[in-house]
Length: 205
Image (cartoon, rainbow, N blue to C red; front, top):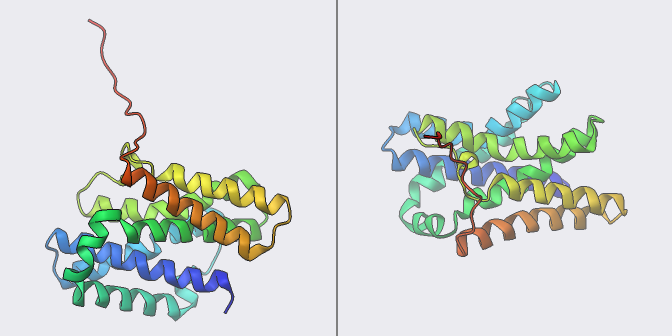
């Protein structure tokens, strides 16, 4: 198993935890919580693969992803009281998930020979659309549409990935650097409450 495969499983695991915790906060039943955990973990990658026409979907051809989701779901249920405060403080599970999935989505797009710009966008899609589906199903405005720095962190990591790749930096360092940048941007934004400007439409009187 290479670094990319390991990160993929880790990202699936932490996104499943994120989805299960979000569902638990909405007091969904056991099946509802499991479904939200599943859709959060695979939603972004599924949307990406559908756009790129890549079949079969990753979680369909490899049972390891479903195992990672199941373990993440059980961890969220069994240890919820121990991890919920950590999640609220730094949104740590979302942050790790988007960092990992951005790079994974970008890498997969490049393997399909798409333009680098499209690859960066596919990395963002991989990272954020699981959360978009999760928040929509939980009756929340998705984070990507908030003033929080979320999607921009993914795009920044994707751009750094392409820059380092252009200069022939060794692959593990490229991956680690891009994921780290996304995580750092999110942590700093949350810690110092940095936000994007909110667009407001005001009618002229």
